Image: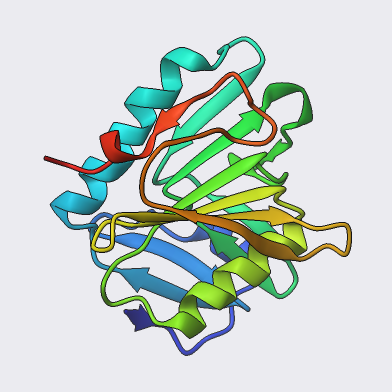
Length: 184
């Protein structure tokens, strides 16, 4: 992961060119450029998107996959690029072409190189934005850690599953067969 030494402001970030080869996030004003995802990562995201898309009403929800900017905070600037997110259209706030409101569900596909500190940092960012539900998918272990926002404002693990069906708390009509997410 490459970083830049300069701490960026929101306004400076808006003027930057888009990253061509990789994924760009900003954490506390520090630009982090990660390499493009490996094939298995993309396959997992595509599979989950294909499962969820027909079960969500596009008039009331917006399902987004990778490469969109989610602004966590403007000062110090922190942005994330979730692998998949589900928004309720009526609650969405888009400013300068980026989302400034919490998705109702965020999905992150873990890579073998992710450290626990990196994962905790993302969890903390999603908590601060008020994301009600976060799924952490591990293609290697073929498990899904389901986290939900507690009354105290913390994302807490409510289940770790490797089989059966799961449903997002705010979209109970959506059913996901866990084993169908993983590439064959």
